Image (tube, rainbow, N blue to C red; front, side):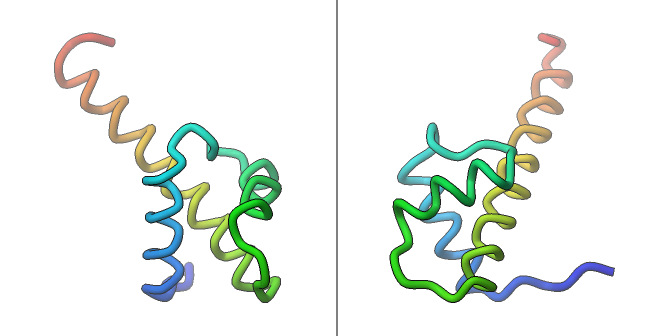
Length: 75
């Protein structure tokens, strides 16, 4: 079973994604490198949790968009 992420991780990650939609993608390593520009002093565990949640959130958004396209018959 997976662990439940704290609400502060979710809030910070979602704010970063909203402000910088084009910067993050579905690759954890890429998101981790990009995150270094936005988060200055952070514990490694928190930093990795943010990068991981951003990755999962982007995958979820991509899947949701794909499902909506299929529902509309555009894909």
